Length: 121
Image (cartoon, rainbow, N blue to C red; front, side, top):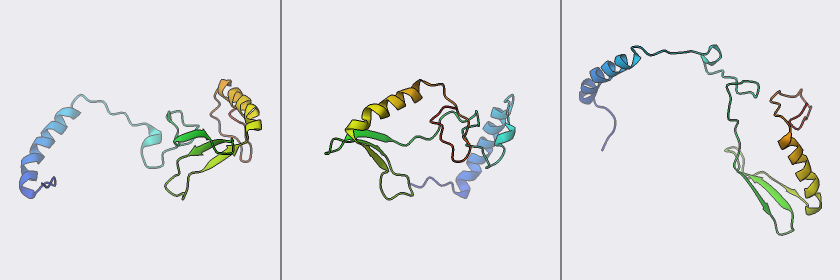
């Protein structure tokens, strides 16, 4: 069954849609944010309107050599999943640093090019 409107069904639907559309707009308040009027939306971490940053699906597991593996689902333009391995003896240092980052206040300011802050200034 086709879901596309024919000229016959469009004539029947169009006046009803127009009526419902105009009724819905009466009394409605439309707010346009000045930053969001076109396709040049600011997706940077400095835009306070961005509430949920992109986060790839991430898995953490142990490989056959006893190393911790942090693996993320590949992006559309990647041939394989990116991953990193951490040898068992280095895990305590990595975990300690991750706990420091997790307990520090979030700083969403973008660092200067080449500056890595680990989430802190």
